[in-house]
Image (cartoon, rainbow, N blue to C red; front, top):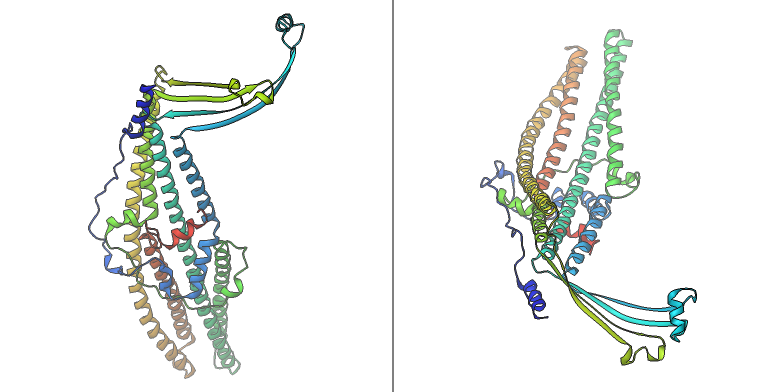
Length: 479
């Protein structure tokens, strides 16, 4: 018995086979190229920086009701259960059993004839009750490595849920900003329709007076129809975004149409907040954290596979009572017990363990490459988002100056046309240029706001390893 106890003590305090996990490293620059675009304020609730209460309400509803997040929370529950099961595998198991058996021997069998010859009763009822215990002693750490892998998988599931939460918040913001952009563009088109209609009325009056040619009236009418046609895809896009927002918050399309159909200005893009050190992406980005945890789990599974090279030792015991009558079931004479130790060792399996170890090492190499890719993609996302945000701001400022100039030029053209100084083509050209610039400005304002969202998302906004609100809300349903 002493050797078995010694093995148990070794299992509880010894080292596990397989490589110990060491967090990977990757060389990154000290700062992002566009780091001047990043503020230093906290970014947990980055969507509040847009100053739009309706946007804040939609994102909070999306984080609590989105179906993708519901699936992610369920995966946390699954991983947590697997982690508990892996931990329980290290502990002894106990089973209770009991039963009543009634038997009547056939007199036409050898056993029955012998029983009758010996004077033993042909029929009897047996009662039994007892408990069975078993314990696999984790001498070489295979079970401990399995528990380590399961815990890392749970961490990865939690981080992945955080990534889904960040994505849902960003997609909701993008859908809302796109809606406001399309509504702004539709307002520009409606205003231009009114202007073109007034121009058509003016030309018709001049045509009726014999001052304007019929071709001028036809040109003005055609321009009006062109602007009216341009409004149709904008209305279709607005309907699509209204439906998209409803789905993102986990509701049937049409539920929020009344509130969102009222046009509002595009929220001004805030300055993204977060760390300007690329190395901080390793802990700020939930997708990078999830990839690192999956790498840790893969490394632990190498130990699970290597443990199959070594013997598996287990202890078992049975303690119970059995009797032909209930009155003597719990007497000393009814007591029965057994105990033993088992050994399982895969000595000859024609290379199956070698293949399992190779497979585990290959999975770890793949997980390492995936982690490196996630880090590089994260850095790319930040640089691209910051670049787009910077250029969108420059373009917006230029377009605002252009529109101011074009508005003055259009007014001058209309005045000159009424005075007969210029032709209708000058007025329509001024209208067309102003419409194009105003429409482009609405698009750029939308692009700028969405670039800010992309920068927050790229920086891991809304989630931290400690954790931050999006992850906490996303995981709340799994606790």
